[in-house]
Image (cartoon, rainbow, N blue to C red):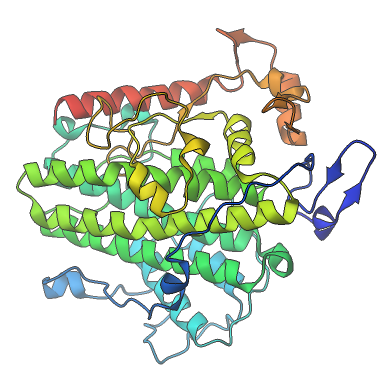
Length: 435
C-alpha cells in the first residue's frame, strides 16, 4: 500500500514531482489543455437508486434473491447488515473476497443503499491480488476460449455469457478502485468513492440482467470457459490512480461503447430482441462510466498540472497499449473522450463496419498490445517530443534486469502477454467470420 508521502509535492531543479498518487511518477510541468467534463455527470449522481434488478417480466426462479453465505442474512432496503461494517473500504474488501457472483452483485447493491443513508465512512482497506471467483467458469488463456460454434451454448447465450463475464469483472474493477485507493481519500475526496461505488452498483445490475437472460435461454454463468485479461489490466494499474482511470474506464469501458451497437445488431439478426434490448440498455449506461473516468482523470491531471491528452497517450505507451477501431466516436464524445487522445488513424472509421469486433462486449478484448520492448522503458524514455518522461516502478525495473532476450524487438518478459492478446484477436476474427 502506498504511503501518503507519495502525495506530497517536491520541487527539484529539473522537474516537479507532483502529488501523483504513485510513488514513482515524475512529471514535467507544462501548459494544461482545457477539456470539458461529461455533461450528464450531475444528473447521474443525483438520480435515485435504481432498483431494476430484474429485466422485464421474469419467472419467480429468476427473481429469487441469493441465499447469502458467511453468516449474513438477507439485507432489505431498510435494514442494516448484522456484520459491523461501517466503512466503505471494508465493504469492498468483503465483496471482492465473495466468490459467488449473485452474492457479490447483491451485496454491492446493499452497500450502495447503505452509503446513500449518509452515515458510512470511506475508511481504508487492502485490495486483494485476485477477487473471489466461483469454481466455474474455468479461466483459460484467450486462445482457448471457445467460439459460438465450439460450445453447446446458442449464439445468443454465448454472447450473453461473454457479457456476463465482463460485467462481473466490472463489479470487481470498480470495487478494487474504491479499496485500493482508499488510502488517498483525503486527496481524492468523498465524491470519487461515491462515483465508483455507483459504477459498481450499475455493473451489479448489468450482471444480474445477463445472468437472468442466460437462465431464460437455458444456460447459466459458468457454462463455458472465460479468460482473465480484464483483471490483469487491473493489476497493471494498481500503483497509480491516473493509470487506473486511463486504462479501465477510458479504454476498457470505452470499448463497450464501440461494441454495443454491433452486438445489438448481431443479436437482432438472430431474432433475439430481448437480449438485444438488454445489451442496448447496458451500452447506454456505460456512457456514464466512461464519463466518470474522464471526469476524474481530468481532475487528477489538473491537480498534477499536466496536460490530460498528452498524459493519456503516455499511459498507453507506458502500459503497452495501442487502440484500433472501429470506434463509436459519437458515444465517446458524449462521455467526454477527445478523439485526438485515442484515434491516430487518418480516415474516419464507422462504428458499423470493419472486419474485427474489438469488443468489450463480444469477445472481451482488451486493447491490442503495442510491441514496445521493456528495455526501452528502462531508459528515461522521451514521450511526446520530450514533454514528459516515463519512470517504471521498481517491480518493472527488476523484470527489465532479468530480461535480456528479444524477439522482433519485443522483450521476452512481455511476449506471453503479447501472444495472449494476439490469440484473442485471432479468435475474435474467427468468431465474427462464423457469426
